[in-house]
Length: 174
Image (cartoon, rainbow, N blue to C red; front, side, top):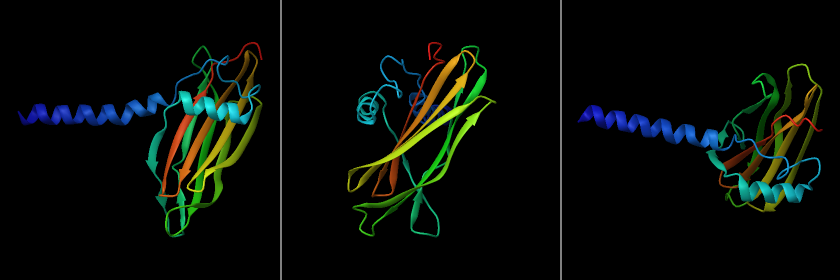
């Protein structure tokens, strides 16, 4: 009976740890979400409505800043060959009463590429005093088309954050 219980607990642990990672890494149709033709407000609304957030506890160091983990996501062409990706890490400062995000800063924002040209975009918006949205986009141009990957963070005054990842297939008509 103990073996079954341990096996079941192991399965559930693996299931609940890996399913969110796959859920945020789904490719989206460009007809629904296109960073080149949509305003940032339209993109944010689409992300909120279509990509479930995955929540994390921010890491703290000896300073007053909270840090997201280093997040990397990769793009592959239709032949499953690596073409590039994105790597981000953000820090944010909350007030002592944990009711307001005071400041944010980019620790790392890298466009990863397998030798292809890239273009980047990033921005920040205060949604409420206790919630700041930060987004990063990497475009990669290949001989067969372009592709993108976005990281959408929500940074909360209680020291947590959420991440939503949006990325495309190769866009042959770009």
